[in-house]
Length: 213
Image (tube, rainbow, N blue to C red; front, side, top):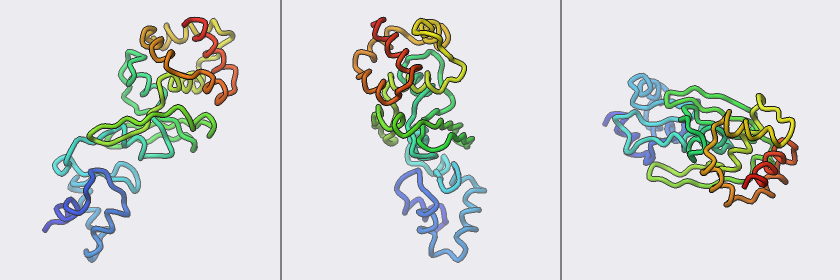
């Protein structure tokens, strides 16, 4: 039996780590050489150090890039531009999978796309997430209004001078869809956001939205 057939038989999921890979290759005399050969033939693909997926011919289902975003670097939650696009709040498609993390900010360019991670303090990071479930894997993404707050806070270009600054920023610069924003606003506890961020920039955003809706 070929090495790729052997590991495909023993590793159930399409995404796996180095420990799993070496474990199933334990009977081979030089498992690291086998891994190198599998990578060279693109039978497996290294997403980043220690994280792999099967090549296209050996996958059992499509790879969820959203699930990968949670795995490439963690702890992390999809947010900011990617989440805003996913919820239909902004018109642009987000090609970079943007996440927040309690670790340091990092970027990863991988064979399966670009993943960007922006640091938030633990208090700001650790709330407002929801689990999305699919046939290709489950993954964490921030709730829509939390994603907007993360965008406002991390966007260094935007330095509001008052609550009124948010009208142009949200609806002209970001091109937020107002009907969609209103729908999500009514389902979110804004007080939690103010307490978690404890910063004027986000408090002004909340006060602007409260007056508007």
